[in-house]
Amino acid sequence: MKNDWNPELYLQFEKERRQPSIDLVSRIDKKNPQQIIDIGCGPGNSTQVLRYRWPDSKIMGIDNSEAMIAKAKRDYPDQDWNVFDAATEMIPGKFDIVFSNATIQWIPDHPGLFRKFTDMLSDGGILAVQIPLFWNMPLGKSIQKTSRMVRWANRIGKIHELFTIHNPVEYFEMLSKLFDRVEIWKTDYIHIMETQEAILEMIRSTGLRPYLDQLGEDEKSGFTNLILEGIKRDYPHRENGKVLFPFERLFLIGEKC
Ligand SMILES: C[S@@+](CC[C@H](N)C(=O)[O-])C[C@H]1O[C@@H](n2cnc3c(N)ncnc32)[C@H](O)[C@@H]1O
Image (cartoon, rainbow, N blue to C red; front, side, top):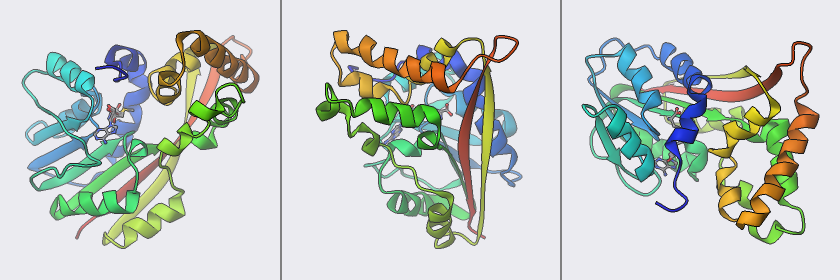
């Protein structure tokens, strides 16, 4: 499981990570879906939001991380978890809801991916997706800039290309070709953090992972110290000592009528 996700680290910020799933689920207008799939279910946190809203539905969680699926199986042994790569494998079956929270930015070719997701939908099915707009944020920009420093540019200067994130207009063009009804909105979650270091910890297990994976042990702390310097500049302490960390997220819904 080298370079795999660390579910425990990921769940340190479970509350912040859960809210977008709650908001996305609240906008899915579907009474009694029979079959639901959570693509990139991680340790099962987003799947539990689906489970809470539709307790009687059959819900499958898939993820290409063995560590994440192992954690989901440990925490929710009665539920349906599978290691599956949504980028390369065809997921068998038809679903009334195809749901994916904070995952598709890790997968390339979004027009192709949406076609694949549409083929998985039953008649009247709904696709619901949330994508973090990471590169719009001061933190995302600082990570890109730091990764281009000469000392490690040849290894991590292009890591941001691993992520696929389009703008809302591009997503509208993709989805309106496939769906009768499309909804798109953005929310800026203002996380109230205890410390500036907590911001670093929050992204260490997600967006920063592919960068750290390419660096030697001695370089990791040099890189993260520079990222922390940027955080201290861009996210100052407020009067009561807390730190505001705005996190922009894009939501997409497509419905086959
Ligand atoms: C940021 S986590 C999101 C987890 C959960 N959905 C949530 O809302 O917190 C992204 C997840 O996407 C998974 N992932 C990335 N690429 C994937 C792929 N090609 N197929 C399936 N899962 C993938 C990762 O393993 C990780 O668990």
